[in-house]
Image (cartoon, rainbow, N blue to C red; front, top):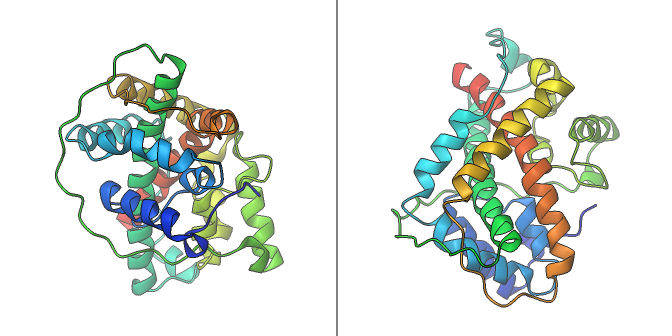
Length: 267
């Protein structure tokens, strides 16, 4: 598995940064990329200090909306009225799943913009940094439950989660996108996801959706380059992961999040 510091295991200095990430972004969890940065020397504090002004800026909400609207998600057929119940969700479960997916859309789109801006800044350190005005304070959100450890899940569910992860070009080498672990409390949804979102999980469609996400994220990020401080000790180890997550992992998951959220809006 990709090295990470999970929130429930974080020492006080990392927990404080995680709390700030949640507060400024308005996202009630800490995504995998930040948990991985916490496992690299000096990277989490350095990266978050760099992108914090743009994450909390007046420009971010509009940028998020433009990225979300521009993602090339293929047409997904609405579910039958009985599909959610057949997957084991009652009204309480549907409400919890909607809340979680709203958080994952916001978190992943925020991250693709902010971290693409960081990548572009590292690629062109002489380009001037943007100036940011603070935006409205993000609404406080109730924390999502801790992600399950994959080794604690039933074998059949693990196999399905790994198969879903394997459908993404960037999710090899032990990377399990957090979304699939977060869906584990609803195994019926995990088992049905590739069928429900079949047009998206087709290889060409996934790559098209990813390319559209990368393209619009780079357009937004180019106008939001952050200031960066002195490079941390773990920068060399961080760069390949930053490239992989902003070019492959996050832009592969954003279309899935948008498509599942679309089904939930009709459920």
